[in-house]
Image 1 (tube, protein in one colour):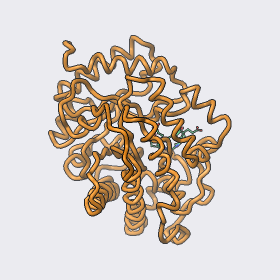
Image 2 (cartoon, rainbow, N blue to C red; image 1 turned 180 degrees about the vertical axis):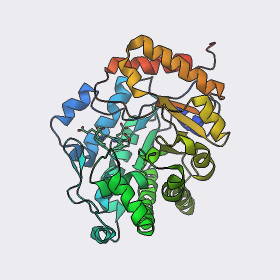
Image 3 (cartoon, rainbow, N blue to C red; image 1 turned 45 degrees about the horizontal axis):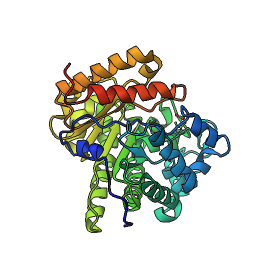
Image 4 (cartoon, rainbow, N blue to C red; image 1 turned 90 degrees about the vertical axis):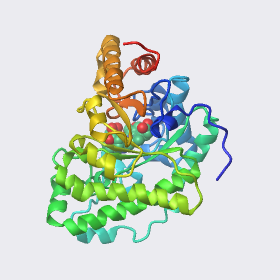
Length: 365
Ligand SMILES: Cc1c2[nH]c(c1CCC(=O)O)Cc1[nH]c(c(CCC(=O)O)c1C)Cc1[nH]c(c(CCC(=O)O)c1C)Cc1[nH]c(c(C)c1CCC(=O)O)C2
């Protein structure tokens, strides 16, 4: 592994390991994106996946929010997308402007169209290069997060051919072809394991798995279909790193909306941190997960459209609720889902400032 500059701010890594921190570390899902004018400026000249595939540009975009919010953000997340894994498996994915797969997997017979063996270095080496370049450019300011999509969420995109409101096709697959579905989920999980291990070797200091559609499944279907593949990833990554003599990195699972499954996820999925959305009260989430994991989240991203007073009020409330459930110990502040394109970057700054203030161990409610 390359020799990287020493890390100056390890709040995120300490919180992810469940340690007490002087305040909650904070970063925001989709922090490098369209709400930033500097992102839109670069994006105007390049296609979305062209940005992902050009390490110098991916590095520049990853650094944009870190630069703009210097001293306020406690992590960088590599600019990429969860859909690079279906691409590595051989599927075509367009972004126009939402994700679109011209040839989705209609039936299990279509699985034969996927690459039988995925050479992750060859197909996704551009992500590894972007991580290494970014880690060097960060000069130890903040840790660098690597990520991938969870098998169930990726399976949904690959079967639906894009986003969906009903998940009819993806769920139709699960219920009509449960064994084939499980095999495909595990096949995706195997690629995720290789991809995440490669990301650590390239410089990622924490890994997050995005299961954006976890909450669409009934609890017993989540446990049957999604949970085993999530566990396969956590165990697979840990084992491979160990076998190669590489120190482990903290891992976060974001099972969006699967709030009735939090206890099972904390106990059985094998991650250090569980991300929660805004539909669960933080103090209640802490009760559900116990002491096993750190928590991440969870302000409703739409509060960022409510003005400064609302943002301050909601951050203060969020801090109190996480603290009620024993924060700032083992809590990473974030939104409950990605920041959206219409947010005023100065309101994002205010959110970060409020977290610094109200999550401080010294703050008296
Ligand atoms: C479901 C999902 C996707 N991508 C991702 C998820 C999981 C998180 C979530 O649930 O939001 C993850 C993702 N996508 C992107 C990142 C970059 C890192 C970050 O700043 O968090 C990350 C972590 C950049 C992006 N990924 C995308 C953009 C916008 C594309 C553009 O510039 O046109 C960015 C900055 C495109 C994308 N990519 C995806 C969709 C649905 C879209 C289009 C709609 C949208 O923008 O929300 C799939």
